[in-house]
Length: 394
Figure 1: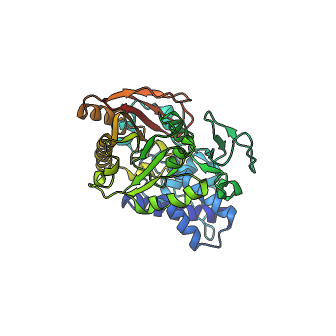
Figure 2: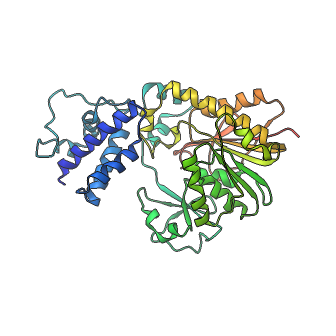
Figure 3: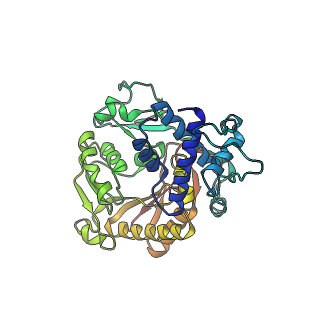
């Protein structure tokens, strides 16, 4: 493909991403994957270039653009070499017309910028959220040792016992070590949180919102398979991915529980008031992960945020019913919004007298926020997270 044809393909993909964002359809990564499957003529260099153009254009825009061409023109405004590729050539974009509309720049839609600012997020952190994320992995301590593991590339050691960092786009999932379960892709923030949790061998730990099991596997490795881990979630497809991942990692998961929304405690009745620790990695806006999925900024609105915060309250209340006296809950969201962090913990403490927030010693700089801590790309060098530790009354 010519450079101009790559730009035009990126514009067409941006049209699809924008339409999906408005209709709450597929995210950008799925749209690109489907496009590449049906456009086999695009070689590996073409695919990489087109993917970079799409994501760079998304990052360059604040509010959702009118169309893909306006988004690409925003990117071209900062990269003059791209403007030259609007040359009207076959398969390329039309020449830029005088006064043609250009998408607005910015870190996010205006309402989200206001919410982030009210949550104490600085412009510098917002800028960091618009960058590209590195690729972090966790060396699986059940099968390997970071100091002795040989990989195709030498990663940067992270401030956690098993973490390594590689450049964005490193194809670690094609490495034999990944296929053999020696490494797992996991952001530094997630690793910091799991390492800091007050869990011990022999304990009972419930991962209440386990999803595909990234933190579940990290919990098993942290305990050396010497604990009872229960992985629960309402998403059958994602939870179904845990078993093969656990087998590959040699991680022992005692029980996998598919939850029926609204009837979660019935499915978890065997562990009522019995768990030593419950990890609530709650569904959230993902505002802390915009480096990886920048189109998520366009997919969020105040109504969907309100639904998420209500769900976060719900899962926290479920967790409270599962913890033994004196046990603990860790509440985690990959969000930088107070409404999905400090506010949720304040509301929980108001609903549950006797519970007390506890300190959590993370091995990297964080920012205190309410009764918890916040991690962000600028301060911590990780995705954005909020984490708080709560102790049940004895």
